[in-house]
Amino acid sequence: MIDTAAFQGKTAKFYTLGCKLNFSETSTFARTLYNMGVREAKKNDIADIVLINTCSVTDVADHKCRQIINRMVRQNPGAFVIVTGCYAQLESQTIANIIGVDLVLGSNEKANLIQYLSNAWNNIEEKTPIDNTQKKTYHAVKTKDITSFQDSCSRGNRTRYFLKVQDGCNYFCTYCTIPYARGFSRNPPIKSLVKQAEEAVAEGGREIVLTGVNIGDFGRTTNESFLDLVKALDNVKGIERYRISSLEPDLIDDDLIEYCATSEHFMPHFHIPLQSGSDEVLKLMHRHYDRALFADKILLIKERMPNAFIGVDVMVGCRGEKPEFFEDSYNFIDSLPITQLHVFPYSERPGTSALSIPYIVDPREKKHRANRLLKLSDLKTQTFYAKYIGKEANVLFEKAARGKSMHGFTDNYIRVELSPTEAKEEYDNNIIKTQLGNFNFDKTALKAKIIL
Ligand code: SF4
Image 1 (cartoon, rainbow, N blue to C red):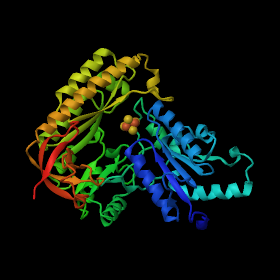
Image 2 (cartoon, rainbow, N blue to C red; image 1 turned 180 degrees about the horizontal axis):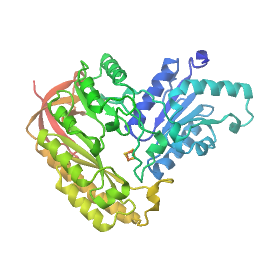
Image 3 (tube, rainbow, N blue to C red; image 1 turned 120 degrees about the horizontal axis):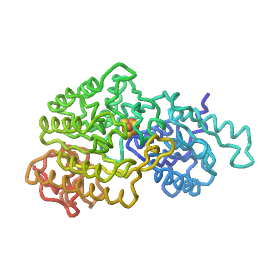
Image 4 (spheres, rainbow, N blue to C red; image 1 turned 90 degrees about the vertical axis):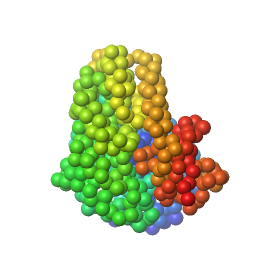
């Protein structure tokens, strides 16, 4: 039994680390607590409840999580502190041992936040703890037993909604801990996702980003396909733009590319993790494709949607990436019509099979490789943007502070800047026709004028 009265009038603070999926899930935690009568705590107030949603993608992320937990405990004396997310699943005991943490929820348990919170409060009252360690508890089942799916469709800080369509992963790439942290691939049925998209429309949503861990694997638990989902969402009236946050190359069907090429609502914008352009390294990573397949997908996308923006994830300095493999990878990436690179330096993760690969890249060399790729990325992005200078484009604008420049994105994800004198509140969350001009000061956007 949940004692709803216990939640009334309490205040909460939230902190999210990591990916868009985590941000989307935190918004859902917040909404769930607000529905129980909890209010958001003001910035400088001490909250009654603190929830930290963690990430464990690198050892730096783990370190940052511990720092944030300690800081939030310090800044909110007496608060009931809940820690969840990937790090909470992988290192439950470590987190439970941090002074001030009251409840640790692993990946399977976070969907039942309210129930666990209510139980934990009851236990505290029964036990009347003498010291902090007595009231702590953690819940995290083994990876293979993670089966729950927490629905999440939330508005980010900006205009977009993030709709979680899938969770978990069955791929077990050698460097990655995500399958251990989030469990095997699973998804809700299409009809439930369509309903969530309709609810976003009712709240004024215009753009939805489909998020997940391995989205192309959608349908594994419901015998549906990702293309079925895309078609069903495309029919939801009111959503004018969809973007797909990331798709593994081997799971991008040619039919999906064809469908997006003619869809009015699925934008010409793809995000595809390559990780390495060297076949030797791809094999060491246990990726499910070779670079020829990757190139075929990119070229087909560009043939069917010449204006498509293609973002690509690349990992540098992973074990086994000898200098000649990196050069090969660099040249391959350089040769493709890619728009932007997201560069991640490899980080050693405990428990991963990559640790058995003997060749280790020196940290300085890793940094050097990352910098070379980041420069290549800037060059590619600016070359792409430059092609649109002087062209007309529809831009979905985002809220801006009064007196500041307003920003938004074209259908093919070019960032656009409207000067403070041109910016108007009524443009927020609206698609407006613009004339694209030159680069802004730091070359992160194209300046634009409204076409009246
Ligand atoms: S596809 Fe590979 S990198 Fe991506 S989540 Fe799954 S195991 Fe990790």
